[in-house]
Length: 276
Length: 121
Ligand SMILES: C[S@@+](CC[C@H](N)C(=O)[O-])C[C@H]1O[C@@H](n2cnc3c(N)ncnc32)[C@H](O)[C@@H]1O
Image 1 (cartoon, rainbow over the protein chains, first blue to last red):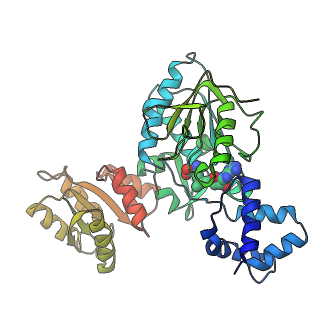
Image 2 (image 1 turned 90 degrees about the vertical axis):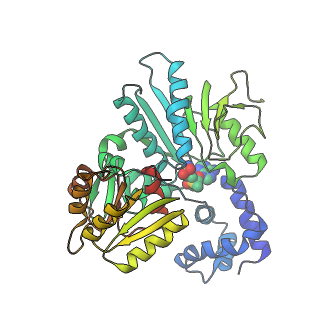
Image 3 (image 1 turned 135 degrees about the horizontal axis):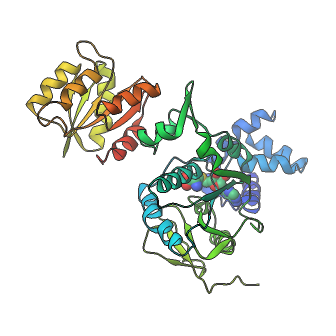
């Protein structure tokens, strides 16, 4: 088992690298989660892994340790109410403020294995088929190269493709290859995947009309959550919207956003400017 | 409380489905093939039907086609639950009147997700 000192060291690295706040009661969980990586690195246990990493001050190995600790859970159209709010409220509101032929730019920040940006691509495609969409550019980012690789492949297991997708959506947008299901090229082509750490400036990426950052900030402490929310606000158009996960808040730590009345959906305050 | 008829020739599958669906607050009836299912429906139309494809006596797809032509047979929400995972088979099921489709093996999350898609939850 990890010692408390080793755990404190991991917690410091996790906070510094990705803003992941590890509470002390997570020691046993962290110990178990690191076991496979320890084995791959030829160590007997997580404790030995941390010791080796520390002795060699191996930056890449610290990255790998932190990568093993992020929560990768996701599924298609996660939280049905949120997707209804996107389709019926957020996207129509944004489009109303745009020229008829304007291109919409959407950022899925913390996209994990890609279910979220592909859900977006499917939704925008469906709206377009109903004659109310717009040409859309979707940028999807995550800090984990491991998760991003899977997302970029766009290939999902039979289990994954049955969580959140109706059968009609599944057969309209995916093709079966053996036991797996691959998103069709048209959907795949609508999403651009990139590595990005939300702890750093998204400088060249913005401005976006809509940002989804769902079930990512809940792992952070208030300090990192505030800073990240303000970086996101800085990457939004002045009337842009932010969609967080169900029950996640933005207005409690920053005045960059206001509520919209829809759970998890926030509007950037046009007057808001980042403190210099 | 909504009712669901679970149609599968495997007792084990019926039991697993029953346990999950009872947790989702459904009242469960069981049938071991399409003909038994048809008889159950003629007695009382359920709100939902979880339907296997390959069964002795009468297959799921034959049951569904017959059901949809019966008095009141358009009403139940039908969710296929089968090992068939060919796109052509799935399309055939939808054309025959299926509302949702589950490819086995399934778990509670998938059943929940698909029943929600079908508007049952
Ligand atoms: C629980 S998943 C959420 C996936 C998806 N947004 C959803 O709601 O289903 C959280 C994701 O956030 C990513 N993440 C955590 N910290 C991050 C950071 N500092 N920068 C970028 N991505 C991060 C993780 O790698 C993980 O893929």
